[in-house]
Image (cartoon, helix red, strand yellow):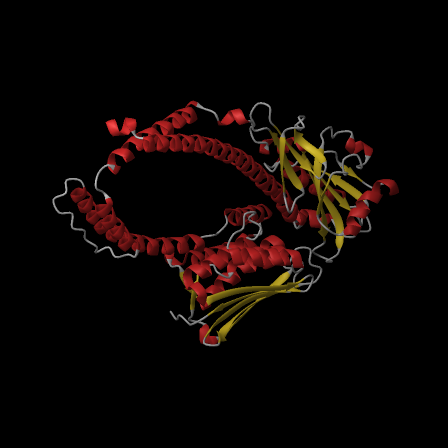
Length: 554
């Protein structure tokens, strides 16, 4: 140790280590600040995204209520053109509307404007016949637009006697109602929810922070950040128009803690101790043993795990060499286990990707069953129960991840039958299955999300009768699966985003979950032997093709 205290080179080396330690501290604090600031942003961004997702689901439930209510038999009766007003039918309709406001959906008020009778049926205020031209103008405008939408300006435009009882600010969903008897739009349904209902989606914030929910430029609830120096994050829904705004400030002082100061002290001490150890070891003959170790590591890097080092009787390196050989042996075992676990993980991932039956889908089925029971439509209820049982039998498929195309055809037919109970008989399903591929195996629930997309997105607000065509047949020694509809199509920009999400395998916004999920399943099962393509033209068609090289028979 005397040589250590007197050597210039060691003092210079110590100075370099101390400067390096100081630089490391500065870099580490800068990194810690950036990491914590990013974590704070990502956490708040995640909270906002979660809030938007919950708000979207809430609005979707309101829209589902409107869809179900619009086809109810009681409501459809008041849409019929009559010579005289049927007061009893209007009374029954008001009772149905009032029942929906009593249901746990968060609905504040329900109104139905009947164009043929020039009457307004409300859930609580009564029925208003022969509205004045000024009062009818707004309802007729909504009827003329012929589309479902959310609006803020409905408040204050109702008849005065109606507006007097409504002392809450509310957001309203407007849905044109088509008569099932004539096929023409005969009414407009208004479902209103209070601004206060959105307070449930406000996340908890720390002192000095602020969060609010907006629809367009209108604040629904919450508070706005008043400090100009605050960072303001905003997340908007791509579908509903709801947006969340979060204001907060991240300060330098937030990174300092007892743990950080202790870590800085430990790093400094570690540098000093390392200096002493390095100087001590450098006084010994280490070159050749270290070279031998480096050679051994290079062989391990080349996956030569059978490498063995001759340590001789060296007290230190003999044990190191022995430990090195023991590590090489364990590395070989670990690599073998990793390969096995990776294979199991791929199989597990495939099963998880297969089981994507949405709880909301089952929830809608139960709602339809309850409604049919109340309406005493037992024949229709029996059809729905049989279709549901058939669909889930093929979907679960006795735990198998594969299904024959012939069984898959029945699965799709069951599914479409169920969806017709929800969306009405506005579309048809055609399945063209080549006899040569009837016994071919494909991943279970591979085509069902494509048919679901065609119904939910393609058939919505479609003026013509919808058609969904599913084809399966041999092509170039492989299998071609296609799902095509004559629906509303996809605009070019959204189509580009879908293709990009399929190609990258990532969908941070969950907008294209079904397509990304299908592409992931194909890659997991077939690797490069499967290809997914999508083509679409707005207001004409959408077609999704899956090509699989090679055939797999049951």
